[in-house]
Length: 145
Image (cartoon, helix red, strand yellow):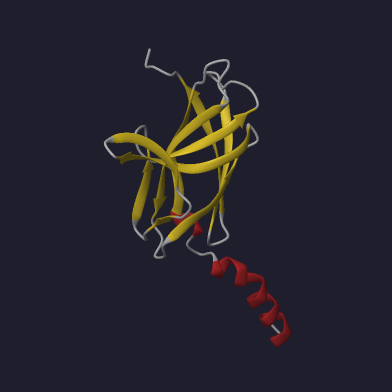
């Protein structure tokens, strides 16, 4: 094989080497909560696992079912539970971020129609390493039946 071919193969493999850990970042058990007919907000829960050797951070969240999606968390402020936007959520190497009721969650704003049991919500989470995690979150009932 000529030197120019070797360089061509090496250059072609470079992107794969830069993102070698991307398969070690995954979404587990995503689900969206059913919404009432007049509701304009929705919520999605999941576990984001970072089995890579690098910390990652969520840069953006998007879904076609809402005008805007953000990472939020519940927090106790002056003895009252409130919700606040999380601008920078970093997940350390070898750890997971658990998005669950009463804690972290993906908040959907201006949903285009109610989220109904049996549907799925397509979601994309963009990470600071350039990776986009795309997944579908099945809609589950507001209360367990």
